[in-house]
Every structure is written in C-alpha cells, then in structure tokens.
Image (tube, rainbow, N blue to C red):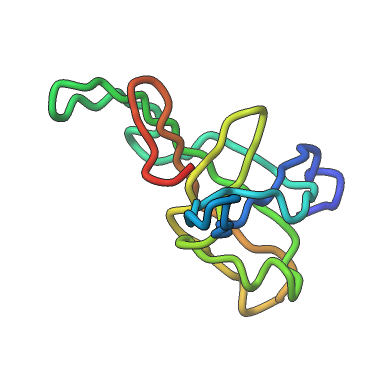
Amino acid sequence: MEIGNLNQRIAVLENHVKKDAIGNHKARWEEVFSLWASVTVGNTVGSAIEDTGAGVTKEIQKIEVIIRQTPQTKRMGSTVYRIRFDGIEYDIKGVVPNYKTQDYMKLICESRRAGAKDDIY
C-alpha cells in the first residue's frame, strides 16, 4: 500500500474508568491519539444492514480500516479501544496484523447507530 492511500483521519478512543466527585465509578471513552488511515466499507455481504431485535431497529455499518502498524497500534484490542471516523464511533470487532511485512494492519469495525444504546458511556 502506498502512503498516499492513508487519506482519512481517525481518532482512537480508549475506555477509562473515572471517579466522580462523590466516588462513583464511570466508564468513559477518551481519545488517546489520532492517525491517518484508509477507510473502506466492508466488502462482505451485509456490510450495511438493519437489524430488529427486541423491537428496536438498529442500523449497523461495517467498515475496514487500514493503518500503519506501530508499537502503539499493535496494542489495540477490541475490548478496550474503539475508533471515531467522520463523527461516528465504531466498535473494533477484529484486528488483523500483517506479520510478514510488519507495515500495515487492518481493523474490522462496526457501528451501531439508530435505536441502539451503548453499554458504556
């Protein structure tokens, strides 16, 4: 991949637990860094679908994000990190590192927009 193809800016968010003034623990997503990426709509069947479960319709958008593989991005996992692209937050569903050349890695991401509530805010 040519470096010029990394033409979209994404923000990487990390889950942190903070205490408020009276000692309650609150989970928050905070931006830890941003980087350039190549973002495409997932090439699998059903990359943009609507799902109805428990009477709530959810719009699900899947994207594939290619980023440079660095020590900082190698730590990224699906349970602690998510990304923000074009004002929408995406859960990381999979991380595919390139072990052969060690230069780029792919993130498989999914957003839940309309009608979907998030567990952690």
